[in-house]
Length: 190
Image (cartoon, rainbow, N blue to C red):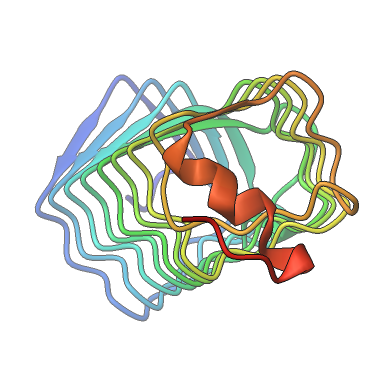
């Protein structure tokens, strides 16, 4: 991974915990079963890449570009995605552990979170218009001044969203999930 530009490569079982990998470009690359926890990936560009089964816990992504990057079966706890470059930021998540991540002020409409855990994640002031939270655990996740118009929470669970502090026009919720919209009012639903 010492080269500056990597195209159409597969990186398998790479172990670089706590290491710095900076100033690199990765295009159409696959990272499979890699260990990058506590590493520093600042100032990198990832385009059309996949991370599959990787441990990226506490990874630093300052000023990195994530353009059409998907994460599957990855551990992403504690990552501050709000430090990434805003331009071209497009990501997707499937079956990922994402507790304590931050998407503060991140513009990410139509993002898919499928079978993920986003416990205690910070989603304040993010634009999640038309995002899909499919079978995703949002216990303790912070939604404040978040754009959630047309977002799909119909199979999400454990969320608390204040309709007075967030834009939720035409968002979808299950009947069971409506309780998460009423927490502010301290009422009991039987």
